[in-house]
Length: 267
Length: 319
Image (cartoon, rainbow over the protein chains, first blue to last red):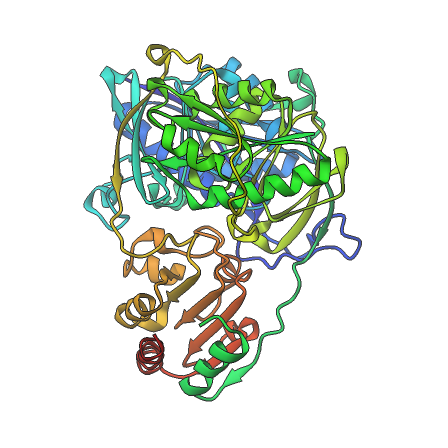
């Protein structure tokens, strides 16, 4: 059964970039910071592509943000997604608002499945997927993973970790939970959020990048969707965590043991 | 303003992190002058409810066949109903996989904004603020939640576990969940068998990186001597030396144990982000210029294959 999949691609600071807070605590220093697609969303896009490769269908990639967020949509199109939707909004967002906007997009697109990264590595909230599922009355399977390792044969063959069940009407999802893995079956349409071990995202090929430039990318102003755009989580100020003093060297294990035992008293 | 904490039980046992969340709830109740309530969900959980009642909060027990497995779709409406019934302004849980799965869904049902992995609170009454990490702990944010009901999860390691302080009341909670109408079906659970503690709950974590060259023997031996969890850098995971769920870092697990031992780990930003809240950090590395030494409370320049077994021997001798 061909699947219509909606997947998200948020623009975030590159995890390799050094994050500094502005002296007045109103935001982070963006000079010299690189941006890329949220790593968990990359896994979401990869999974959507694998499902389409196996079952047919269409992958639509959505991002919410300023015009530069088109870069992350193009990156997903270059990986192989079919078309993009950019919900244009300048200014702060939170998962409450993001999920409300995605719910409106869901109503327009009517996908069989929504796949999102479990969290974005900027605000680290880990909420948007769960909020979206509740808003739409859909089942959710968060922190999707798989039982095979990322070194396995199935991974080499780019098999999807999400498995269609119930004659194509449901999806089996292996979830990473505390102390083990849980398997759920969710009736479609459903919302899935991805964890690290679900797959290794592909790199875009040069022909993929060329093709992506011609793929359709629609823009929707957030204000046109009838959603209250005021964030409910209001950031008052940002600070850097207290610097660790660090830098003390010990000569040998005897001294280390002594320090841990008598000074730090942790052993 | 009343506070509702969502307890977590697993196969009839209270998860440790629930007791830390309970302390956070008690602090909030004090700051807002409200009453602390607790809700626990499951099937056949009478004994769990009685145990939880010893911590002094009023315990609401949602005990029904439809709640046998922790499905967010089934649990969220029950949590939301209890929150309404007790007029909770604050609804929280521990930031475990269960809490992170369930709380946002319950929050959406309550029209509540939410703060994840809260490290501490500020302010009083309706203007309580939440301190939480962003960019994997590279930034600490003070946030306010603008909705009438406010939801949150707390990082367990930041709050002391609650102590027993006399029996609270146990009240049955209404469960209006039609199991047949659920669109989520529980298929099964496969336990990852390990005698070691959970990485995110452990008091001590011993991690290995590229410097192990794939041999985690000394890492695991020291961890076992210390009763510690084992972690790894992304380099070690990417090399396929250890399971992915051992990865500590910005895109792996964020840990804050009392003692973190980093062996053969150079200290890439993305790894540091996952462990720099640890109380005491020890680094063992051959390279005296490794960035990890700038962060470590105690750095030992040397061969981990010699140093770790020596340290393990000292630990054993001291017991």
